[in-house]
Image 1: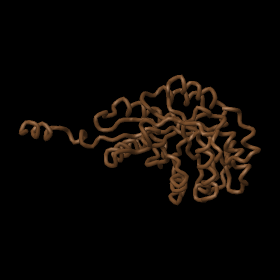
Image 2: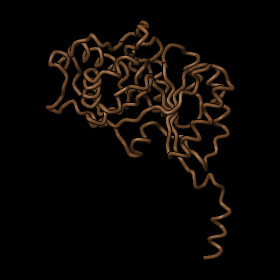
Image 3: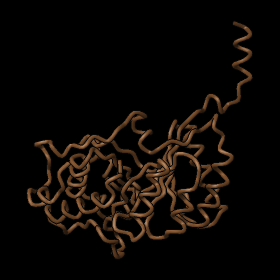
Image 4: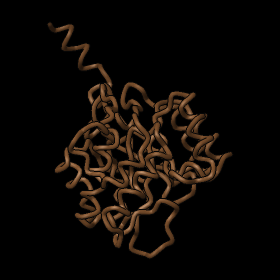
Length: 263
């Protein structure tokens, strides 16, 4: 017993601070070169694709071949009035237009197991659209949702929990400032949060600076302290997507529902 106690006392602190972190790379689909470089990074990085970006189909296929976890990055209205990418969800949409737009985006990335918001500092603060979003994700294929947390008054996570959609929120933006020193500090902050809380989510983008820093940091990741996992594994290590289109409770308007291909 004494020997065991001494052995435990000699273990590094990291052994007692084991945690898991997920890194989601947003805005995939506009740069083929940067997208390919991101997909070459090692480990269980999760990639979120803008549904109607020009290189999304090609990069999604590459991600699938490399067994990478795929999400769909849903454009949503923000407070600045910035022009939305194709497939943008807005506050002035009626229910049918909202669901039709959402369905088109989900159909564009059928390999996705989850979704997160692109921009959305306005839309994620409104209960109505968030209810529609969560009902759509649940019915489409039991997709999980990650709140990118582009506004500190977002209610997306609360609505997701009400709708029984598996959900989490972003902890760290890795590259809000596009310089290697700042990205490195943010990565280290992500590690600290994962160790302290047990898990953490970081979001980055396919910038050359981010690619360079991640390549270096992931090569030296202290596996004994923090492990890199797919975003879905922070929700449930055994989680599998289960299509629910046959459910009679589907919220999709009939006109939109009829446009969906048979399972």
